[in-house]
Length: 270
Image 1 (tube, rainbow, N blue to C red):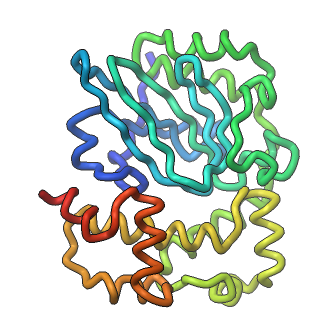
Image 2 (image 1 turned 120 degrees about the vertical axis):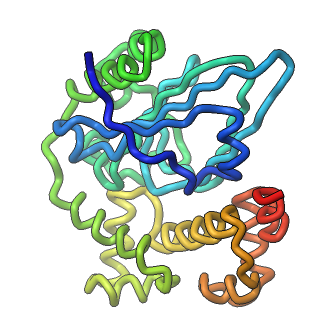
Image 3 (image 1 turned 60 degrees about the vertical axis):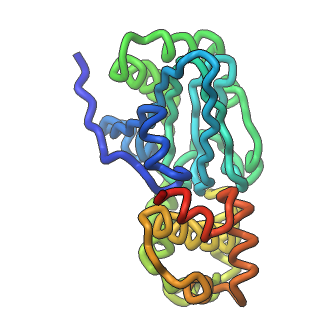
């Protein structure tokens, strides 16, 4: 029997996580040592809603490739530059594989940006039958069985690790941890890499531009802060995030989250 190692329930990237906890079960599990250089974690969503009830859950984009096992919609998902809404009704389970930024380049064998905002069938990347692979995962009896089935599929296609992945991880860690970085030039100075080199590296391995990754991280910082009920002044917050004024921040935030910052803070903290 396989024992899964879980990681803390995620909130970052999930719109109104406190409300979501009442609707669905969200788990994350670490990969085994063989997959660890490529896979950040497996994620699983399971729900059982009463007849007639529908819940639309919005998740926010990250610079990661996902392989998702979902009944009738199993696919490889390139980096999605916009928010993603998923409608939950009835009961179901979905298993996802979140790859480390840059790590999917070795599987795809071409620039990752070629699949940005696109979906591919599993068979376009992995040596498998799409329907058979989907069934092997979704028909498993429990979480461990689903993860084991997905792991077996990935193991058959494991490439050699690419040293560039570690460099990309370091750069993305700088973006995540250094909230003061709001411009690509700041990132270039901090990492000792030219702006042009960063742009080419991100196009090839990440699938989104450095500017996009920085801006999304800062917006996720803001969403996370407001979801926890922070009373931060929104004008000051916009300035901290590198916006020229509050109105531009509000426009970007509403486009991504679905509500203006003040409304989002109230809805998460009724």
